[in-house]
Length: 286
Image (cartoon, rainbow, N blue to C red; front, side, top):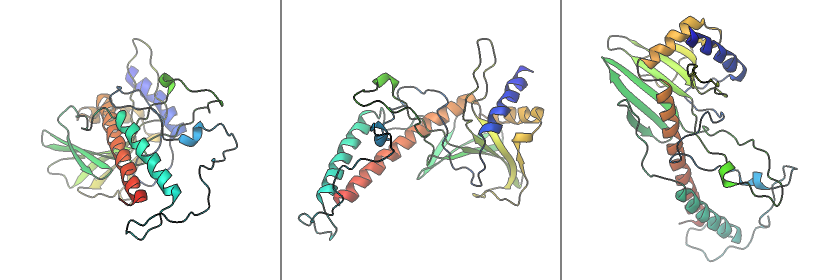
């Protein structure tokens, strides 16, 4: 009974925070839900322009906008300027700093026997339970929430312990397939904007929520809009509770959601470092 009450309160959170989206399994930005271990978090260092005290929103000029004469050609036939050189040097320093805070080059393991398959920025977790196949798909693109912290006053430096931590919170799709069924039961899930607090002795609230449920043709990668889709915003909460229990019985629960955030954060950080390295090579024409 208490579990239903807690989830009922969560409805208000989802109703106020839900956003209309036609794309599924693509992560949307949402704030950090809970801190992860130091091994998978890192200071928020990407919004460099936010450190500027200029409140007008104007981005300061680091270099002259005038195109400089090309330096000695490397044989690629491209333009090489002093600005390119400074850009490349900056990227080199940035890559070194990101690698310093990368605790491990290997991805964390998911408990529960989940097998990981990567396809670029898309990850697919799969496992089999008593003849059923459960797959969870998510994409780390756009899974980092924006930093809305107040600007630091000029001349002041923010303490290191107060730095925001980057945590990837992607939307994810759970697909449950039975051997004799022609269709899969598909759950479109997300992390709510605010995690519901709970006091001592109270049951822990769900840190993820079901947005939509639908039967989809087995093996299809695209969500067919011609199939009936049930939106949970106006769903009877007894039915919603059973759906959450259905997922938990198949290993998709709060523990899974925590580990998924940890995994997604590690994947996103790896891809970010790789992007910086590719960008440096493009600028320097290596």
